[in-house]
Length: 452
Ligand code: NDP
Image (cartoon, rainbow, N blue to C red):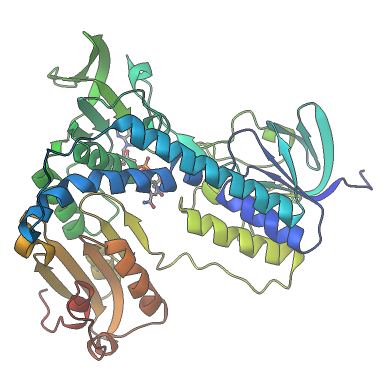
């Protein structure tokens, strides 16, 4: 039995959850180590939320240039886009953030160990050939893109590679109907790439309110994304300078790039967890209890690796709850209900609470309020965008159960509505709120007549 530990907490993985846990524990005066074998900040900072949002901004300019004409602007020459400038400026910004993460960790007093960590036992972690003894170990290694195996699947790239492409393709096929596929379809389309989205189901974004997902799908198609629904690719062949995707009905589609966004899997391979009692599910994710403890009492896990909710703010909150539980007064909690989320598709989708379908399953009397209108920008700017807002209300209690929006600034607006929902807002309270005029958000407080 180990009696002296090098560290009170050894965090494996310096992503959003791992860094927050390490900083909080170090701030309490504990001896903390963090091991990371890639850039600091994990998926979100390096190949996820942050660079993705920068690319979304880049993709929106074409429409803004177009709209500017109606407001009196003329641009002398047609605007030109340079992929290398965007990619390299993005990389510089991410490197700046990596450095901030390093400072944050070091200033908190945590020890940063660079290299792959291998868990050698319930209290031992090795990094670069040195074994450390730790009272507790936190597995916060996140996830990794999953691409199914089939003939030619090695030709497909994942979202990881999209951030570093040598060249922007002329034509791209994106496979999947979830967050990443839909977001990248919007990015590429906005940057001028002929973009095909291939999805095996009938409607993209299947976990969202159906009406709202369909609005996103319609909006994407209006902007130029070509949808191939209920289609499966069975083979990818190299073809001329690009690739030929073969569908199950043997029809083909050619493109310079094929990207798969078919989910992410927990990053638990080759981590040494077989040396412990930690239990994994078939998909590799770590089984934890309500306090993020694994079947090995000294080992904890949180964030994408436990595959509860794969969202950065959730991993951060989980980290705060864990550290408070392990080393504080165990006051902090996490509530997985009513988590707001946004898909940075074009048009954007944001949502909090129950979809209409979920509400109708759970509640006997549901009222739906919808407002669908043209954004004011378009009165002079032209374009075909719409904004759709939806409230789902339990008419028995008047409580707002869900709030959904498709259109410009949806994420910014829904974040505020999420606070109201969390506080148990009623429809009457929403109605009693004065609007901000002129804004899109004011529509939420002026919906008087149920549409369903
Ligand atoms: P998602 O789980 O959101 O979507 C995966 C998609 O791939 C689904 O449409 C699924 O189809 C399809 N799919 C799965 N397996 C196959 C297969 N073998 N063949 C064809 N299609 C398949 O995963 P993502 O990769 O888009 O994103 C991973 C997670 O990352 C998200 O769930 C989200 O939590 C997080 N994320 C959050 C973002 C944000 O907050 N804005 C942005 C990006 C990611 P089906 O629907 O039929 O199952």
